[in-house]
Structure formats: structure tokens, C-alpha cells
Amino acid sequence: MSGDLVARDAAAFFHQDGSSPCVSALHAVDGVWLEDDTGRRLLDLHGNTAHHIGYAHPELIAALKEQLDTLPFSPRRFTNAPAVALAEQLLSKWPGPPARVLFATGGSDAIEIALKLARVATGRHETISVEDSYHGHGFGAFGLSRAAPDPRLGPFLPGRHHVTPYWHPDDGAARMVEGVKRALAASSQIGALIAEPIRSNCHVPPPWLWPQIRQLCDAHGVLLIFDEIPSGLGKTGRFFAFEHVGATPDAVVLGKALGGGVLPIAAVIADARLNLAPELALGHYTHEKNPVTSRAALTTIDIIARQGLIERAAQLEDAIRARVARMRQDIPLIDHVRGKGLLLAIGLDPARVCETGISIEAIIGLLREHGLSTTAKDPSSFGFSLPMTINDAELDWAFTSLGEALAAARVS
Image 1 (tube, rainbow, N blue to C red):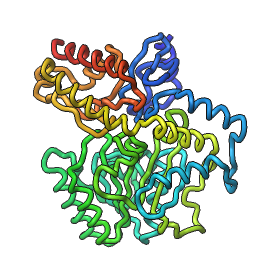
Image 2 (cartoon, rainbow, N blue to C red):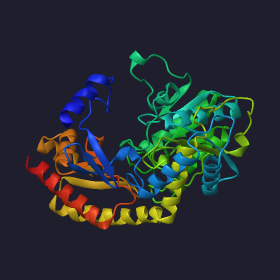
Image 3 (cartoon, one colour):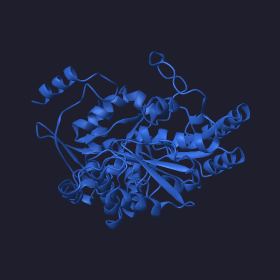
Image 4 (cartoon, one colour):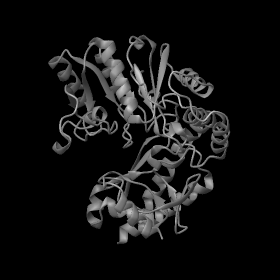
């Protein structure tokens, strides 16, 4: 049955990397679990970083049903209670000077709203971004991720400056700072620097990096935009990931988990001093203030706060690091765990991976065979990004399955 649905999917959808063709077909989701249409269950260690509160959280489902029965849609130029309450809730979390918000239906669109704000505020259209990052798939957002995207896609936004990623093994952070300095010296038209404060491949920057870049941005009148689409909303053990890195941006973008793993919604929170162009439509979408998606986000934030999930993410990081360290004693294939909170990856020893002759893709397959769904973060690491609602028994199950899968990889 699953094979039939996967085949139908492959015949109906355009094929693209990471999507169609699919690995399986889902029948249900619940909490930390995926269930395919054969009844097989997988504990989800990836979730497209949208499953902060797990899947189908009963409070969220109940709130959405109530919202559908009261106000399911709000045309543009009208406001509604969930949208205003969500804006106020997000602003209450913002640790910087007074701010304002705009909503969008996805992270790519929200990134491009932030770029528009930067262009209006600075009068400049060029950008600095980090090579090998990811900011979405719009023509503006995707061009930020790669200096040279596939040439078949044609030109992207002009004036893109790309710098070495701080996680590059050859003194990446210092090279990144020097790249920013060179770009700022080479052009007076740079209006924004955009990056993930903690990359979603789970590399944590050195503590001096973002304060230095913040100073460079201030000295050149460049706005600092942080993309927290995968990392915000408490996943790292603080509400905003940038609260770990010693620099407050001029704008931050949230998405993915903001809709509670149910509905698509993203948000830009930015310094209120950027409120300079009321005559322009900067993010005037049909579902700009949709009451149902707003209610999803508002309920998600409430669940995170009321259940103490941010604190739990921070506590579980310590517990997971300790368990991985113990596991290394029996499975030397494991090299390290990296990240913050529950935005984590487990790195394998590249030399031992080479010795086993098994690729990271094959390891991902073994993990799936042992009931764990995840993706590769690089050629020798995979995501271990758990929902913040995971309970102790589920965490024990995850580690038992992880140990069995990696032991199988060692002997295969």
C-alpha cells in the first residue's frame, strides 16, 4: 500500500531534491512519532525543525477547531484578535529596542520582507550572507544561500557577497570576519548582513564572532538580520537562538515550528525604527493576518511557555551530551554531539566511517530500519533534533535504537 502511494506521488509531482520521490507514505503523526501507512512507527529526530511541540498536540488541535468554528479567515485590510495577540506576544519576547512585526505564509517570504525593510531603511540593495547557508527557495532568499546556484536557474538578486562559513574547519570564524571586512570595503551599497546565529547544521559559533560582526555592521550602517526559522522558539534552550551569541539583530525571522507543526506561518520582528514606508506593500499577502494560522502560532507559544519546554530543552542538552559520551565508550564510531538545546547533531569519526565503508546515507537508512527518522547534516553527521515535548521513556527508546543502529553500522 505504501509503495503504491509513493509511486503515485512520484508520478504526480515534479521531482526535486529532498522531496519527491519520497521514502515512504505517512498515515498518522502523534507526539514524537511518525506512522506510515503500513503501521510502522518512527521516532522523528528531524521534523523539518517544525515539531518543537511534537505532532498533533491536543491543545493546539482543539484551539484550531475552535478557531475554525468562529473566524476561519480575515481578508486583507481587516484585523482580528488572534493576529493582534500574536504580534503582541512576539513583541513581548523581543529583548531589543521597540519593535514591530509582519507575518508571512512561509520562511522564504519572511526573509524577503526583512530584505525589503533593510533596503528601505538603508537605501542600499546589496547583501552579505554565508556560503553554504540556507534561507529559503524564493529567488531572493535562495540566492543568499549560494554564491553560484545551479546555472540552469538563471540570475538571482544582484549584489550578493558571500563569506566563508564560521563552521569551516580551516579557521572559519576568522575567515568569515575577514570576508565581511573585505565586502564592506569593496562596496558602499551593502544594506544587510543575513545569517543564522546558530546554523541549523548545529555548529555553534565562537562567542566573539557575532559581537564583532555586530560592531562591523554598526560601523558601516548595515542591518544585521538573523534567520531563526529552524532555531527559534526555544529549540536552543532560549526563546531566540541569538540570545546565546552576544548580539541582538535589527531583525529576526521565525517560521517552521511557529505553526505548531500543523500550519504554515512565519514572522519578521524588526526594530520599530524600520517602520519607514507605510506607502509600500512590503508583505501584503492574502493570508497576511490569517486568524487560523495566527491562532496556531499563539497557541504554540503558549504551550512552550506553560509547559516549560525552553527550560526542558536546555536540561535535555546536558543529559544527551552525557549519554552520548557514555555511548562512545562502546561505539567508537561516535565522535561528538554538537549544537544547543535540542537543536543537535551527532558527529561520527570520519576516519572510522571511512574504515567501515558505509556512507552517511547508508547510516541514515540503518537508523530508519531501527525506528529513527533523521537526515544527514554533512558527510559524517546526522540530526538528533528531538521535539521539546519528548518524555524520558521516549528518549530512552531513542538511545536504545541509536545504539543498535550504530552497532550494526560498525559491523556491516
